[in-house]
Amino acid sequence: MEEIESTTVERTGEDEDQKTSNILLMSSKPLHRFVQKQPRTLGIVVLMFGCAEVMMGFVLAFDSSDYPTNSFKLYVPLWQGILFFTCGVLSIYTELHPSKKMVTTCLALYVVSMLGIIVSFGIRISIIMHYSFVRNWHGRNGYDVQVACVEYILFGSSLCVFAFLIFLSTIARLALKSTKTQHVIVQHIVMSPQSEATAN
Image 1: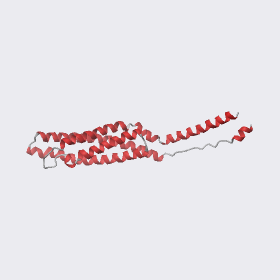
Image 2: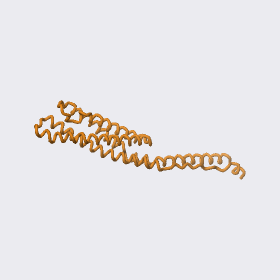
Image 3: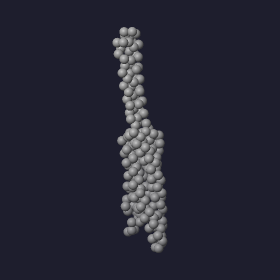
Image 4: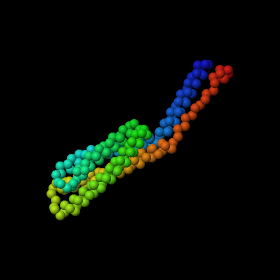
């Protein structure tokens, strides 16, 4: 009779631990919603854009003209490519190891990268305008056309990454906002004394 009672008490204790772990799991559900949007997939895409930005920047590095006619003169492909690469790696890592701290770090880097893209838009638009208007008066050679095409491609890829980062920052912000408003409720169940059970 005593053995049956002891196993019942142990099972009830295990049930209590399981309920507590389920409640704690529910508290981190918004982070799982962030993971369900698959930031790793978008992170891989952003990472590839970052590698392409750096590699195509090397084409611009060999421009020998005095006027700053490409974005490599201000190292835009380097720092923007590094930002994209870091955003991609963090997105991949955050999906594999989700935590509030990692989502906050990702959100901060997404915002910094978007500000960098806005700065690069201004630089690249001025360079594209330079190739459109000024070069018409002096004629174009093959290298000028090549540099202009690379700038157009990098401008378009930055525009795509900007859209991805807006989506990623939106879902990261929603995940962080909903974790702040959620409360964790831990219930403690007081068990009846065993003396009453043994008396019966």
